[in-house]
Length: 184
Image (cartoon, rainbow, N blue to C red):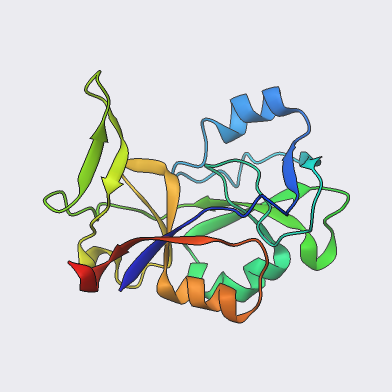
């Protein structure tokens, strides 16, 4: 089993941003997207293009907030039922099957194998992420998109999620392998 993170391919694709960045980032994007529901308080959020390029099924908006098109959601929705919220975004260039949604991942797991992982520790003693990830296999089996308690601003993806995206030729997804259970 392998676990992946997602790094958006931004070199040739459009980048988007919230129109009223200061207000929405301060009130929704920064405090939210940490595994708690936001659907009841989610406002109408207008987006704008800040870097021209090809359209993507996962346009880059923020490193902590994945954004998928409706088309991408339709491809993977059966893998994500009950573990994410689809928060609508408004962008005049992304309509119909290309409508955009911020993905709020609700599935946060206690799944890190602390004996095999290597943490990045700042000089202040505060944790700054991981140099090497290791997961407890039983804690991640069946999970297709999830967060970890130690790093709630990052999503992790299963092989099945990755393969589904690739098989359906969705654009802009770049998966980075962070763990392979067979290499331990």
